[in-house]
Amino acid sequence: MAEFVRSDPSMWEAIFADPSVPLDRSVVRQIIDDQRRPSRRWLYPIAMVLSRVLVTIIRVLKRVLPFRWMPLGTMDFLCVWFLRRCVSPDAVDLLLRHFVIETNLVNFIIRNTPVGIEPVTLRPESLSELGDQAVVEHDVNVYDVLIALDVVPLVARDPLDFRQLDIPPLDAERHRRRLVRLDIQTALCFMNIPFSLALSSEEYRRAVHSMRFDDSFLEILAVITGDDAFRHWKLAGMSLWMDSNVDVPRMVYRHALVCEYAHAQLVKLAGGQYPRDTAVEFD
Image 1 (cartoon, helix red, strand yellow):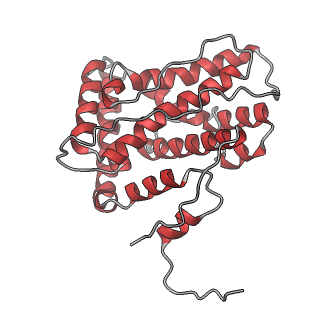
Image 2 (cartoon, rainbow, N blue to C red):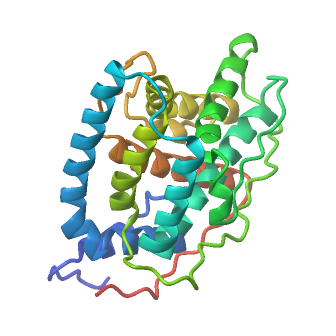
């Protein structure tokens, strides 16, 4: 056996090689590349503080002036423009991918429990499809399926219905000229500002609290599939903890990773295989 010689290990290479990560190697590399963007290192710490301060001020003022400060259509327009002109195509691709993946998870639960509701259809393949209140619909779908589960027994199902776990080709408009190419976390910090302006206080609170259901979804998936792997990614984020004074961009990013992990596990249970790209080199 060859002797392992400790030298100057790369954090990024170790993350990529981590065998406990269930994601496709190409997706892992895409996430790593996004995290290594200069904006993530230099701009994100500033954007994180700026976003938190501005959103806190907006939410306090909305308690005094409780009306919608910005039409939802304007929020959609600003966010789509921002994604087209200021966010890297890889980050946009990851965002579109998250909408599709969460819909796939919601539909897997709908198809494998007797909830009696139709599968949801929010699977945007292009930036333009993120308009028309897609963010609001994205959160409402989570609430609808949880409320529907209140009146049905939650038991393991055999066989499982693995339909619609695919990811369609996504158009991040890579041809479009960007003013800057922000990473996804920095972009989320800036996008949280128009969200807080456009959403009512209750809508914003509902959107933030939807991410506290991650552990609930993981438990539901564990019961339905009989696979304890889903429980390994819980963070004890109890849904009864009703606190919306949190770092929203950070929660959104973790929420997206949890969905990626859960979706990858479902794909593996369905018989899918993820290749390990050992030829990737890290600078």
